[in-house]
Length: 199
Image (cartoon, rainbow, N blue to C red):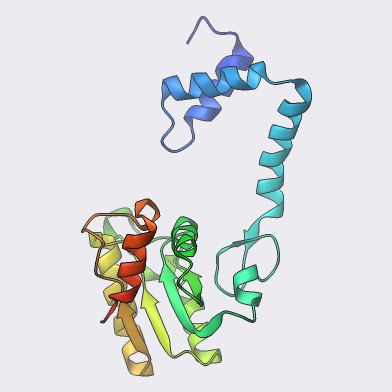
C-alpha cells in the first residue's frame, strides 16, 4: 500500500483495525467513503462520534444504552423476576429477535478465560449478585455460548447462586457445541430457551 496517498492509506488502516475486516474489504470501504458526497461523509463521521459519546452502559443490566437505564430494564411489560445472563451485547440482540423471551437481561462483558487472564472479577458478576440481592428474582437463565469458556462461566455462576436458593437454568436444546448465539437463527434460539435445564 506504499503507492497510496497517506490520507487514503490511513483510512484503509483504520477500517482494517476493525474485527473481521481484511485488506480487500478495508480498501472497498475506504473507496466507498471517497465516493460519498461531503455531507454524507460528515454524517458518517458524526455517526461514529455519536456512537462513542452518546452510548453508555445501563446501570442495571450492563447492556448498551443511551440512557442511565436501558428500555428493557425500564419496561413495565417485562418480567423482572427472570434474568437471562449473556456474554455480550450481540447476544441480547439475537435473543430479542426471537420475540419469545419476556424477562430481562444481564450482560457479563465476556467469559471466564484463564488462558486470556480473564477471571470472574473482570466480568459483571458482582453487578449480577447485587441485582439478585436487591430484587425479587425467581430464575436466572444462563445463556452463555456453548464453548469451553462459556460452559466454565455457566458453572461458576451456578455455583455462586446455589446458596441463594434461586432457580438457575441453562439454555440447551438446539445449540451445537462451539456455536455463538449471535449466529443462531430465531427458531434455534427459541428451542434453546424452551429446552433450558437446571444447572
